[in-house]
Image (cartoon, rainbow, N blue to C red; front, side, top):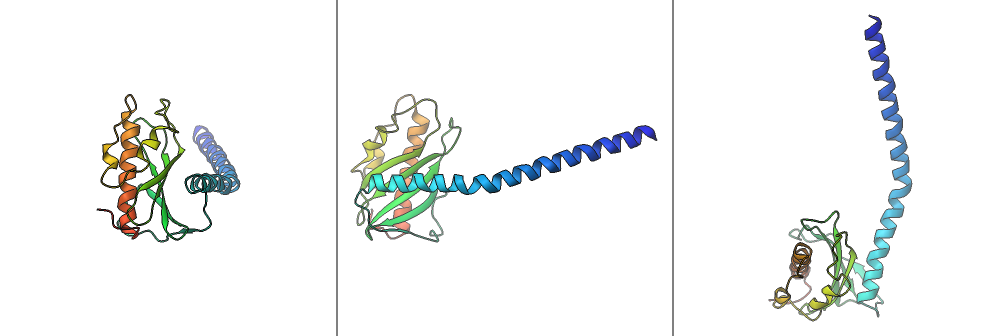
Length: 178
């Protein structure tokens, strides 16, 4: 009977410790979650300003169309004519999502800018230079950009995300891209 009471006491103490730690984590999260969300939003806004330096109007499209690819996280109409599509995708060896903002010219959807907002791979494929290979490409020509040797998973993930951006561009009525 003594051993049974000792076991029950241990279980109660461990449960109380777990509940206290969980409560502390919840309180910590309530303070940090808004700051993390603000930092993430600031990265997106900075990427929009980099792609569209003359931006004077940004409007987010909500809700996204029903068949929007899962990689698309947000779509913005820039200056009432161009589009910015924010994506998050993973590659096979990545420890986190690759955040991408793709700027598309309204009308026929030419890529006018790409910015990687997050990239977690240890092997860099030139995150500031490789995406520039897509500038000026459209839905008919973006697939012609070769994968980056040595980092094929990331470069293929980027190419697939760009394909998703074009798909979303069509869904939101961004233009006639055939």
